[in-house]
Length: 192
Image (cartoon, rainbow, N blue to C red; front, side, top):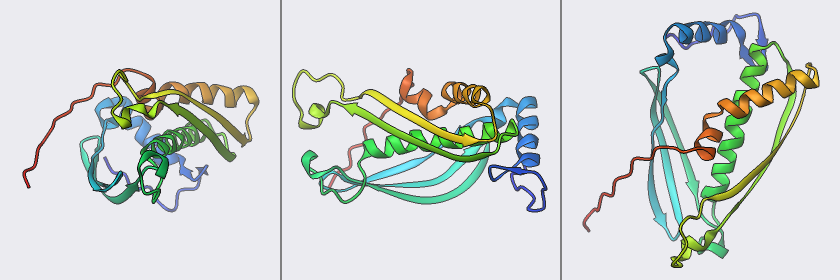
């Protein structure tokens, strides 16, 4: 699938070229496997509670996508960290917000809704006792995640509510946190 939008396309909504978005939508309707994304992250411990994750070579619709990004994470001092970077929990909340904003903007564009702004305030509660190896703690998952989406655009409240409800249903990141996700894990022990 050619994924290079023309810079000369006339109709752009929310920074999204509608001709390009509609072309992709039409291709995905005919071949749903083109919408399948495979993401890769390799992470390494950097000491204390820190880590660095390298993002590289994802796939969308079977096509390799060359990407190269680094994300550094750390815990606050109160959780034995160096407080050098945002925590994994904060990155998770940011990823949820970013995914929601990307989907909301794209769906609005495809519905010809121009946005002036989208802001999300997101917070969540975790039980961090598992980090301290306290027996009897079964899970340290987010107990709750709350978010408020503030949006301004050229649509009625009903139209924006419809987009909001749709995005809550289809957001891959919200779905992954809010429903059962199949995890495949493997332990690889590296000798000194």
